[in-house]
Length: 138
Figure 1 (cartoon, one colour):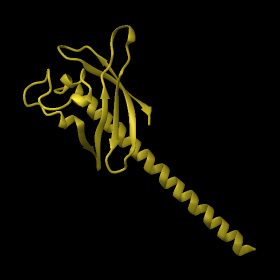
Figure 2 (cartoon, rainbow, N blue to C red):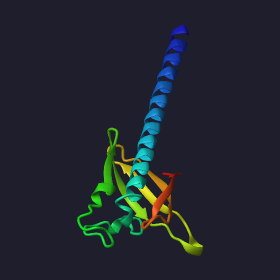
Figure 3 (cartoon, rainbow, N blue to C red):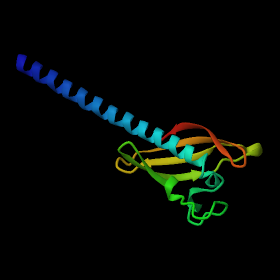
Figure 4 (cartoon, rainbow, N blue to C red):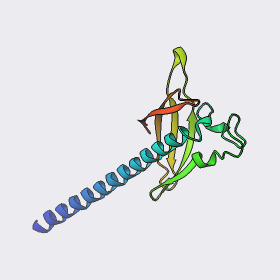
């Protein structure tokens, strides 16, 4: 009886450790995706602001409305820490009565995990700017 109880306690401890490890890995992936979203938002508020009004499917060189030689691949994929990411999709924001934020979907290349973000876009001096980034879930 004592042996069975000891084995049950060991099994429960191992399962708890495995669950904790899985939760930690998921949080790390979410943090990496959040960092990637912030990086993409910063790029889209800078030299790549010309990409904001265009869907990511149109981010092919040469991009209409962008400076010659501007390479959208620099925004479409990158690395944060040890994690490679890619833009799965960007849907531009809409203004006016049907206003809604832009939607950015990112994926970690190694893990395959994805997350959707809302990017609030506001007019800036000569080019639009990303004002905020908010995670919307998977």
